[in-house]
Length: 245
Image (cartoon, rainbow, N blue to C red):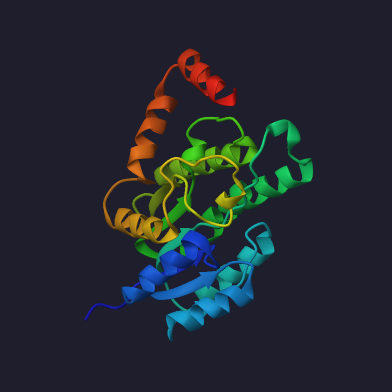
């Protein structure tokens, strides 16, 4: 029998991360569950059964990520690292608190950078590092504010890593559309093609098992967004301007 996969999920305390942990545990994987919320992680690990480890960390704190990677690396190589931790605060750019904006950039973009620097040595040869962007990063949209900008940065970072680390590390980009989580419940508008965390987890796991760089879903939403982003600026900005009105 093959050895079970050893997978580190960062941002596993709820939402997509927790659903992904349940999916992989059901496939027999041994998981390392990370986030800031130790109580939530411990409850999830207890639900999943024996063989899983909780390692709390704050991706915005480099020392915390360093400590986590040192602890995890001491137990042997990983097959996958899936980084999903993020902050979100919808609204107009002019209305966002500057300190909150800086916090979002630090968690979403700088945190991904810390993981990108420190985590790859933990992977076996050919192991997988997946960073989470967003369909919101494809093009600047009204009320996307600093979240969308930070996710565009993560997408660019993943592209750079793909070029720099291949073939030793299989770098992937995850680009979800709207998923029903505590973050998106802050939105006060109708979210097109919104999906559940469970469906999102299945889409991610299936996509990461296939070849290719980007895992994006649901495709009835992501393909139109890709088309919008591919238009010349004069056309794309005219359309996004209508959305703002």
